Length: 74
Image 1 (cartoon, rainbow, N blue to C red):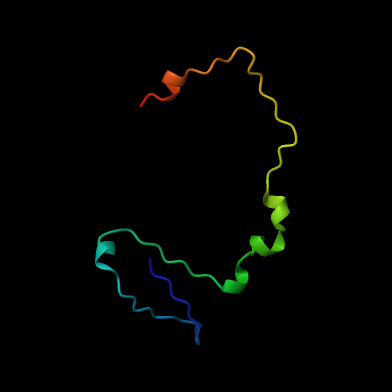
Image 2: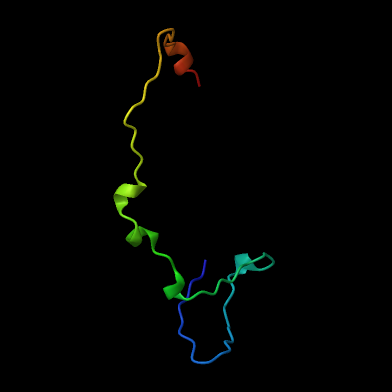
């Protein structure tokens, strides 16, 4: 992967990008965006809203029998 940040000084931009040998013959993508257009969700949303909370979790294991041999099969 190649990443390069630039500040253009005109309306047109001519790129001379060295392509790695392992990219030759493959489809590649070029992405052009301004960094002020990015949405910073990691800053705008507090970390608490990204965590899952399990307040109640019940599993009925009444008829379950653990089979150690089956669990250790490879």
